[in-house]
Every structure is written in structure tokens, then in C-alpha cells.
Length: 318
Length: 318
Image 1 (cartoon, helix red, strand yellow):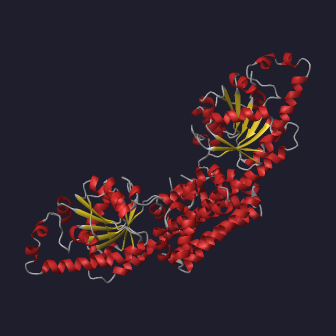
Image 2 (image 1 turned 90 degrees about the horizontal axis):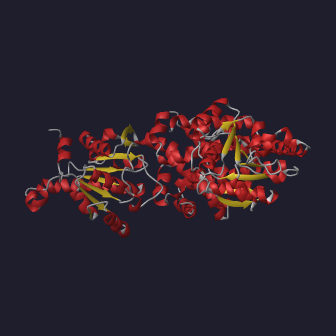
Image 3 (image 1 turned 120 degrees about the vertical axis):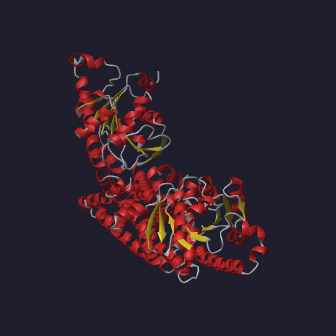
């Protein structure tokens, strides 16, 4: 019997560390769609923890240690600055749990847990992260003896809102999920996590961690930065908020939407992906300067050419 | 009997010059909601003209001259570079039609038209524009003897699409409509056009043409420019379109959405609003440079401060 099939027939417990937009949305669909029979949550902010329970995102909110002990799959859904420390710690704890299991009489010491359905042995547990940068986190665990139990992923979905209140069903449907350095994970662990994302209706895309960070800087991180710069510009130039409200056609609202995203998430992304982000910001400033020069010299042909080039994005995005 | 009440009970004919997104969407709702009993369209592109008829945007597509002769209200919904020439020409034609009407025996020469319901006399006809810059167009007619028959407006609504295919009902609902230099229009003409936009469920905002151009540059035009620069950057850095497609989360799609907008509309806006656009681009580049410097020096406190400031946009936009 195929092991991942066995897993799906077992009582799978998913533990989610960080019950924000991403963690909360995963919790909803993994439970609803039957991938997880039990979803445990870890959330250090008491207000968010209570909200997650009230909304019904998770079955229980448990302490960190208990989550690692009880869950078969642990999803680290916290800002990447924290995740980069948590993932190695979780792998350490897998090792400790394994040692305890290997002790003679281990099952006698905790007879309930040892026989509980779905309570994978510590060697079969998997930890994944869902962060927007991958190089540092993959680097942090590269030589960890339990590296194979980690799968680095980046589900390309989200909104500008955060917290358990922002969680929504169907958030991931139809989007891409990046698997970073997947050849360094155990094939079985990778297969299980591919199944998890298949449940979320995500399309898997494979690349190495460095490639991931280059490409996300070029597409996603620069979008975020331009949106922040736009908000800063408008708030600086337009002192009268009533004018912003009145003159904000749908265009401004959509272009500035990402500027509502919080610093906790984005500061570590921008600093961790430092080189790629600087590189793409420099290109962006050059392009902006090209447009500026064309406007400045009333060069309509050049403007027309730049806009026609920009319009090519139509062919790629619906 | 109040004259605008009389107008609304008359057989009002609205002529729309330019059956694109804005003109077409106005045509739909002015007819559906009973403001116009007849909607005439003028469209120089034969494919668009045929499409407008096929979709049913207008009752008839007519030549320019016929539209001016038959319509009570003429809406100029073409790119601002063309509009700036058309509006004075239309006012000239109002003068010519008035002179013809004043000739002895005029009603005998065209007995049908003279008695047609809703065929306002040339002195009661109104022309409006719906363009995104207002200074040049208001300047172009400032000393026109028929200036009072012109109302400069800017309905703050739109999408990134163009053409009669892009027209949609309800496009204007709940948005603001700017009236520029409204004190230079005849009170009766202004009242009629306020009624037109009330039919479209728009909220009137009054400002002078120069103010309008400053504020739209600060909010709307800069959004457009940042979106073009973003598309140019991504298309330049990311040679593999498959990666753009895969990595484009909802964030990139929304931030780059405006980059699909066409040059015909935006080249004249950016060059007509030259000074304000350059001014706001310069501020934008400064803000981008501030973010760049903070990333470059790993200054997390500064980044956090910039993002917190940008987040203020949440309080203004829903």
C-alpha cells in the first residue's frame, strides 16, 4: 500500500504555527476538503488565538511544543524573520522526539500517544514553511541532519489584509505554489506536501531557492515596493485626504492596494532578499526616469513606444 | 415650470462622440435610466461603430454634423488631444446653427426639425467633455462666445480596457464626478449636466481646472505612470514569461493592471499635464530612493517607519 495513500487514510493532524491570512486560510480548506482530520493552531498573540477559535479556523489552539509532538505535518506560517529560526528548532525537536521513541519502553511511557491514529513517528513528521523568500530559510537548514523532513514552499496567494480575520476559503485555488530545493526533501515528504497543495488546488512549480528569490523580487517584491512608494507619494503631495478619496478612481485603489500590507511581513522579506530587491528597484527607477524624460521633452513618440511595450503585459496576464 | 424639469420631460437626445469605454458606458445608463430618450453616437472607427450598434449601445450612429444638429446634449468622449480641438469646433457650430435659426423663415426651411420634441434650440444645446485633464480644454474655450454652453467634467471611473466592448452598465455608480470651472457655464446648462451625472449615480465635486490637474496628477496620473514603469521593469528583468505568469500573485496583477491602458488615451494626458506629472514623478522617485536606501543599509527601523506611513492609505481607501 502506497505510503501517502496510507497517510491520507490515517487520521492526519496538521499543526499550523501562525494563524494569520495564510495559516488561517490553509486551516480552513485542509479541514473542509478532508486532508486534515484535526487542525491544531499555535498563535502567540492571544487576541488572534481567541479570534481563530471563535471563527472556527482550528480545532484547538495548543502550545508550540504540543503542536510539534502531536501534528504529523507542521506548517510554519509566520513572518520569514521568525520562520528562519523556527524551522531549524522544529527539526531539532523531531530529532529529540525520535530519540525518545527509540528508548526501550518508550511506548509504555506514553501508551496513548504511541497508539494514536495518525500520530506519525517523529521520523515521518514533516515541517513546511510558506514564506516569500527561500534562500535564507533553505540555507538555515541545509546541513541539518533532519533536512529531509523539511519542504520549503511558497504558495503564491494572498491579499493585503492580515490576521485570522483575513483568512478565507478558496484563497489558494488555481494559483501556483513554488517548491524550493525540493530535491533536498525526502521523496515521501515531498509527495505528501504535493498532496496537501493539490488539496488546495494549487499548481506546483519547482525551482531552487536562489532562483525563487530572484524571480519573486522581479515580479512580486517590486510590486509591493512600488505600491508603498505610491502611497508615500500621494500622502506626501496630497495633504487633503478628501481629495484623495474623491480622486481615487478604481485605478489608484488597485495600484496602491498592496500598500496596506504590514511591516511585520514585508520588512524581513525586503531585507532578506536584499540584493535582488535592490537590483530590481534600480531597474525600476531607470524605467521611471525614461518615462519622466519622455514627458519632460514632450516626446510623444517615445511615450507611445514605452506604453506599447508596457501593454505587452496584457498577453501574459488575463 | 422649471426649465430642467421641462428638459427631463422633453424628448432628450444625447449625442456621444467616441463610443469607447466611457462614452459607451454613459450611453447604456443614460438610456436605461430614462435620462435620454434617444442616444446618437459618432464613431470614426468603422469596426467600433459597427460593434456599438451590434451591442446596442446607441440608437443610431450618425455623422458628426448630424449629431451636433440633432442632439440636445453632446458628450465628447475622445482622447483629450482630440477633445481640445473638437469642443471649440462644436461651440462654433452651435453659433452657426443659432444664426440659421434666427434667419427669417428658418422654421419654414426645416419645418420637421423646428417642431421636433426635444430638439433644443442651438442656444440651449450643451457640450460636455469627460477628459482626464481640464486646464487645456478649459483654456481652449475660455473666450469663446459660446463658452457658457460648455461644461467641463471628469467622471472618475474607468477600467484598463477600451473600446465599445469595454462599456458596461453601472460603471459610474457611486464614484465622484469633477466639474471644472463650473462657474463659467450657464447655470441652466450646469444644472442639466448635474442631472445627467445624478442619473449615473455620481457624486459631484467642484474645483477649478488647474486644481483638478494638480490633484489628478497627484492621485490618478502617478498611479498610471507607476504601473507602466512596473510593467516595463518586469518585462525587462523577467525574460521568461512563464515565470511572470507563475509568480504573478494577485498582488502583481492588481498593481500592474493599469499598464494595460492604451497610449491613445494616456500620451495626451501625460503631456498636457506635463508640469504636474513631472513634479509628482520626482517626488515618487525620491520616495522610491528612500525605500531603496533603507533596504540597502538593512535599516529595518526606517523601513518599518516608511511602511507604517504608507499603511495610512488604509484609513482613506476602503
